[in-house]
Amino acid sequence: MAFEITAKDLAGRVGKLYTKSGVIETPTLFPVVDPRKQEIPLSIIKQYFGQVITNSFFVYRLTGGRVVDVKKLLGWDGIIMTDSGAYQILRYGTIDVDPDEILVYQDKIGTDIGVILDLPFDYEEPYDSALLKVEETIRRAKRAATTLLDRLSMLVVGPIQGGVYFDLLARSAREISRLGFPILAIGSPTTLLEEYRFDVLLEAVLHVKANITREAPLHLFGAGHPLILPFAVALGVDLFDSASYILYARDNRIMLRDRTLRLDDVRTEHLPCSTKLCYKTVKELREMTQEERTLLIAEHNLAVLREEILEIRQRIHEGTLWEYLEIKARAHPTLYRFLKSLGRYKRLIEEYDPETHPQPHGLILFSDTASSRPEPFRHRMRLANTHPTSKIAIVLNIAEKPYNRSWEYLYVKKVAGDRAHVLFYDPVFGIVSEEVAEVYPLSQNEAEGEDEAARAHAYEWLSQYDLILAYNIDLPILGKKVVKLQSLEEVSLYI
Ligand SMILES: [Zn+2]
Image 1 (cartoon, protein in one colour):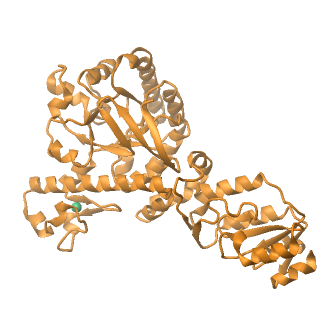
Image 2 (cartoon, protein in one colour):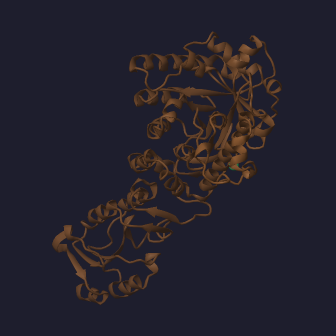
Image 3 (tube, rainbow, N blue to C red):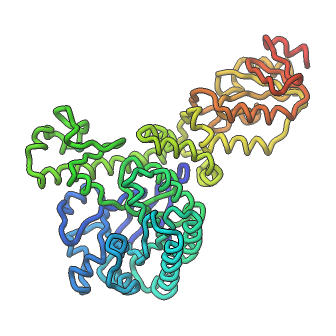
């Protein structure tokens, strides 16, 4: 296998991708470089990223189809990925090269990771022609898989398509995933990103993830903003490529971890950043030539993208990727909406999410998004596989965790022994039974507020008992079965 997973959180993972020129630690990003005119010296890119992507169609055109060493051509000694020119089809309608030829060409020029030539489309494509393009790309992928894959020394990417037609995406994902490509990719979401339609893009990623093999790394084409990266990783994307660092720089747009800042809008003497590039004053930046400025901003943008990637990897190791999404979601309403709506896919995410982490950190839970997280869902599923140990329940709503080390629990246990099933009401997880109170993360969390789903879970679970002694909690829906205790001493009156 070319890909080895070393840590997981949600559907995200940290891994190692083995190429013939070296190992890539994932998640990561391939900065896009242009063989025709590269404004940012590759020696600068090398300080931030060990891999780049370039367009093999441009190399082909530039050399008249001659076989050259693409690394020499670019002056790059790291890992190189090439794409096939599909994006040029999107922009200019057609390119004059045979799909098999451009794939073999990528291998011959020394590419480490190559992409088959798909027929991309943006999300405005009518359904019928989208369907035709998807089918043609699947046909090309099948042909490449059966006749070319074994003969090539590079890793080959199988592109998955469908735009915003989720049925097409699912079908494309299933078919391409079956063909044995060492890397899978989702094609051409750039137009969605340009329009800040993060939620649509992320939902497309989910539909792909639900229909591909777990083992293969997944590449998302054209996504390169620090706001979108952690969300895409959390849904299972491992690789990105983007020209954003330079496109933004040309436009005097400065990437920050949570937003983009226009140089014109900066009101302070220095940028709110401490990369060595930002030692320059804003005045100096404004007064230099556009070329000099582009170089500095592009390098700053690369530094910020690298910082973002490193943060995401650390979060995965810690098991706090969701907490990180909570922070990022506040930066844009579509991201917040998306995070809340993730509940619809919690079954999928729960399947990927590891139950614990090597050095588990306590969870930080917020009541408005808690029910979208895998942990409360997992807890309720597990509890559903257990049974009441008595027909009498004692429900304690207390703050101390672990709940079963509280004085309230110890006292009740002494009085009731095994004659009652002692339960705790947790405002996020719902009912926690005494047997599982110390299971991760039921006592390793800090929570804010109360989730409606926790209430609903309490009513559902408690309806199984004949008598419920409730301490510090009102349960009106359960009616006469409930006795509200004024003090714990009253327990002895009922048991
Ligand atoms: Zn900076």
